[in-house]
Image (spheres, rainbow, N blue to C red):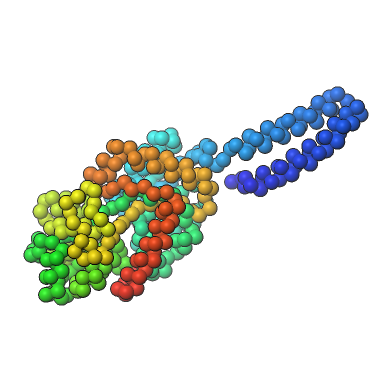
Length: 358
């Protein structure tokens, strides 16, 4: 990619020297033939217009010129994947250029994130990442990238409400009842997660710590097998994404106790938050779009602007809301601040709970 600033400096220098030389010649125009004099004047005019034309162009003026790879670091069907495919389809239609979703699961989402971090900074490789990649993974194990130096935030695009559910065999109706039961029966209740260091584990350990209770962690290789065992009663508690749990809640196979966010969810206004009973327990799971560090700012701004437009379309918001996903947009600067704040907060929780990754 052309370094615009370097080009402009060199071009201004060239133009200055050319104008100076030609001006000197012009003073002695009598010594020049008419064709030569016209030629040197033409050079001055053309250099001016060439500079103006280049100065008005930017990398984003004709972006994108080729298909974009949109990396999703989980298997198809999860919240990240759902959101990425909605965005990809809408932007493909808007730009008349393909935005292709590629699933690259593995290593707690680190595999797909690493691929994006090490891609060329040309704006053609994106990551749809959940917050745990940036704010919890670095605290529970070594990651093959620097979350603050290797990525360029583009936009926060959605939040995924987490909820607290239990197996129907647990004779409680609300969070207060669960806390009371757990205190009377320490270590009896088991909770599941999608692995050590996962958002599900972090959320439940935060509840354990704040409420002063003991529940036993059973890690799984993904949320799906954990939910399967929850339905079978082999584990009794789960804090996870509402879109994965809602069908079983509606069928009465799971008992919904509370939301796990810092406030009540817009889609479930009557559902209390855990924090209303146990202050300090809040798990706000957000999804964001990222590119490799070094992508020109005007490309980042173009993608942010166009992505915001499509996400605010009524059909998009309704589609995602029906799947338990809330559109929540934040610009690159706000997302960068969120990452730093969440990084510090979760680092403290992980250290106090002595949570380790796989």
